[in-house]
Length: 277
Image 1 (cartoon, rainbow, N blue to C red):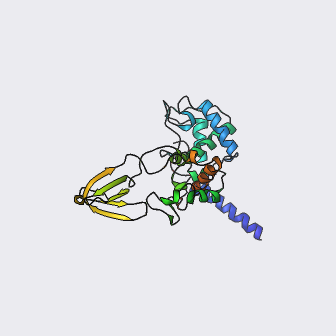
Image 2: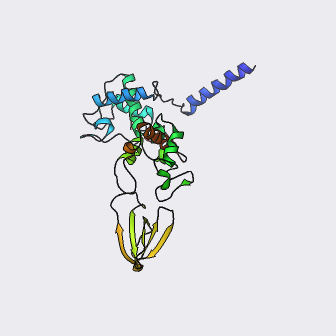
Image 3: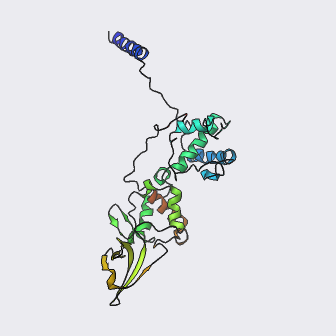
């Protein structure tokens, strides 16, 4: 009797779909090769051989097509949508069909998804525990930066840095000079009495300035009390960690920072402007 009831229920469901046009759930294809490092590496090689007539090398901006990395917002987010775009092209645009086999396309999909991911999506194989020791010890990072309530405040809180930037951008922050983050402009002031205070400028306007120093003390000055105000054009952030640390220490620091994703929000991967749009 139970078997008969189950068959009857399924039959009624099929009739409902046929009679009322209830759409069946579409199962979108997933990458059978997954996102293993060797698949991503093979996809990168294929991409640089077949896609750089328009796009730039390694997913950067090209002469005839935009970058494919995480620096801009994309409509095609899911594996299925990217696969369709690479395999069949995008109607009404200059994007042609690739002419590649399905497995070759899936390798390129893995590469594109990799370069669009955050550092926490692509965390390296280093030792996070040792990385934290470098952060609080030899690297001196904790003097300025905080992780989960521990550390300094003169630099940005890094408790969720792995979810906010790409792995490449995280590495660049440690090894290359870049723009000063908003709210962290270095400044040195001298008072009318000769006292000198250095730190980063907070709430700086025409009449007053707040300065947060390296001891996490906030100073408030009326600008009429100051003899001079000198702003630095360079960040307080060192950019030579790849030189002052050993290769293993640097790898471990990167691994630890990339795993800081306390507030990570997963993007909907099967959603807006999917296949064919």
